[in-house]
Image 1 (cartoon, rainbow, N blue to C red):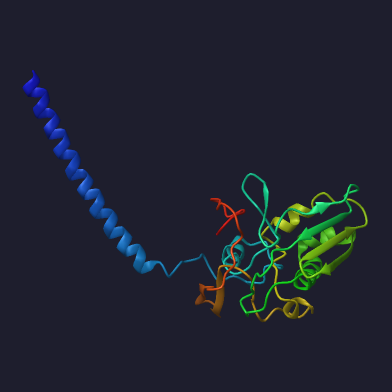
Image 2 (cartoon, helix red, strand yellow):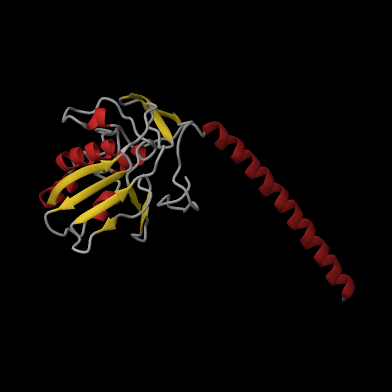
Amino acid sequence: MDMVVSQERRRFLAATAVSLLLVRAALAQSSSAAAVRAGNIAVIGEPSSIEPMLTLADLVNQIDQHFFETLYYQNPLFNIGAVLASALPDISPDATRYTIPLRENVPFHDGTIMVADDVVATLQCWLKLSARAKAAAPFVETIEAPDAKTVVITLKQPYSPLMTLLSLFNWAAAVMPKRIVSSMDPIKEFIGTGPYRLVEHAPDRYIRIVPFAKYASPPGKPTASWASGRR
């Protein structure tokens, strides 16, 4: 009986070893193929616009999140984390004043550094263009920059959805330089702070993006959903 068990075990181990070698070979082949294809990602069609404040479309959101970022981000469990803000806002006891601290030394793709004036201009543009933000606009009294690293939103009365709206990436408050968002003209430059920068958009053909070498990631432990932490 011992001899039979030993032989059966040897057969099992030999078969397992062969299976593992085959799996390893298959993985190596698939990894090599994936490496060749890594630079190309297919999408379902041509986006109507890649302006993040104007659309709810998932197709646009999935593209835009490569090169735009918001002050906050919301994970699948609806927890909000800081991205371009350095922390959650300090909210006044009457819930009408949100003081938002900003991260410092965050570069835009054009080489300029994000400051509070950029965020103020972005939020003012967002309140006018975004369908979601238009619901919040009647509640907003002022958006101001008391210094280069602080933004203060003052409300006429409490408005509880504000943080949710600031953290969603559809009809998004995607932060851009003041010179781009200070007018109501259609955006011609897609300059953000994200880990990739837009190089070229050839309609009905492709959207080309490349890694942004000077990208400043949020600090902290990375999360699977990119909600907060290092990216």
